[in-house]
Every structure is written in C-alpha cells, then in structure tokens.
Image 1 (cartoon, rainbow, N blue to C red):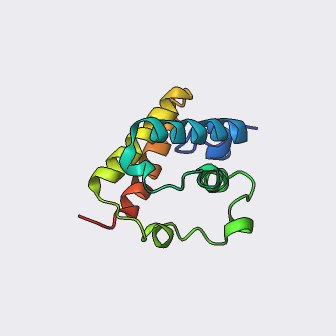
Image 2 (tube, rainbow, N blue to C red):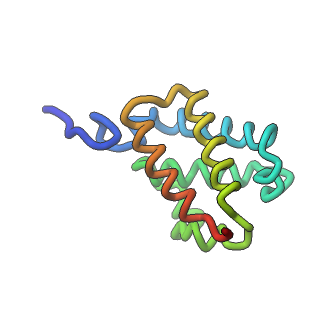
Amino acid sequence: MTRANHPWGPFDTPFEAVGGEGKLRSIVDRFYDIIDAEASTLRAMLPKDDSASRDKLYWYLVEWSGGPALYSPERGHPAMRMRHLPFEIGADEVDTWLTCFGRALDDNDVTGQVRDFLDERIGALALHMQNQP
C-alpha cells in the first residue's frame, strides 16, 4: 500500500508529517518563548501568564493539522478572526508573528514539504487576522 502524496508530503495528515503532538507542543512553546523574549508588541497582547494562550494555540494546531480534536471540544468553532478582533493587528504584527513562528519551526527542524505547506497555510491565516492597515 502506498500513501498519497499530499502537499505536506507522503503522510496522511500534516499532523503526522510534522511529528505529532510532542513536536507541535515543542513548536508552540518555542514560539511563545521567542515572543516573550523578543516581540514586545505581540507580548503586550498576551496575559501575563500565557499558559492558556499556549494551550489554545497547541490545541488549535493539533486539530487543524489532522490530529485529535483538542480545540473544538474546549472552545467550539475556532472563529479565529473574530477571536482576534479585540487586538490591533497590522502588517507589522503579522510579520512579527510569522517571523516568530518561522523561527519556532526552524528550531524544531521542520523542513521539506511540510514546512512549505505550513509556511503557506499559516501565512495565509496570519494575514487573515490583520484588522489594521
């Protein structure tokens, strides 16, 4: 039996291609660590204790990528743009967010087809969150 060749590579889901729950947790934690240390504009949008934010992004990415449903049972439909409307998100914030996320992927050795897929899809999602010029 051969697996179909998807945009993320020869895996059934992006979740499998990236390495599952452990790898996604590592990516999310590294992403927030980078924000904490280097992205003050993004850090200012987060609560002092960002553990809930970390969990929500982790749950979302696991479910979005084809893993177990962790987000929707806790939070319902993602409605990501609506959830981000209270924050002023302009082009600079989108660029900073994507830079931090890209570094988290780099630091977790996410490469190849799954990296290309994530860069494209996560990039489009981040642009969709922009609500300021």
